Amino acid sequence: QVQLVESGGGLVQPGGSLRLSCAASGSVRSINVMGWYRQARGKQRELIASITNGGNTNYRDSVAGRFIISRDNAKTMEYLQMNSLKPEDTALYYCWVWAMGQEYWGQGTQVTVSS
Image (cartoon, rainbow, N blue to C red; front, side, top):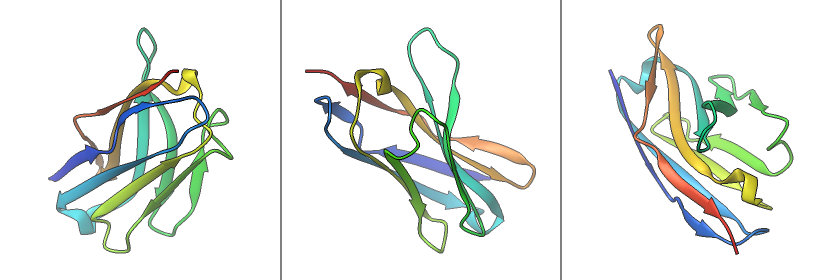
């Protein structure tokens, strides 16, 4: 089992930045991939960034060049640095990991981009 708790969401103006954090606990040594999903109102949940144990990162086209995913070596913390935020980035953001053949989710943190 892996437990995930996000923090760092909030209200930000267009063009601003936010950093999301995710604290992982439990069987963290079993984690293979860490990532971030988001779900906007009325839309499906989508994977926006991921990082493997080897440090390889992948980004959805809509956030590439603006968002940066990172984690600590112990896999107890995961981060999403979000820059140049746009109103269309408004969503509930979820921390996610793949471990022991299954996925685990945090409870979500709201990010609202509005002037």
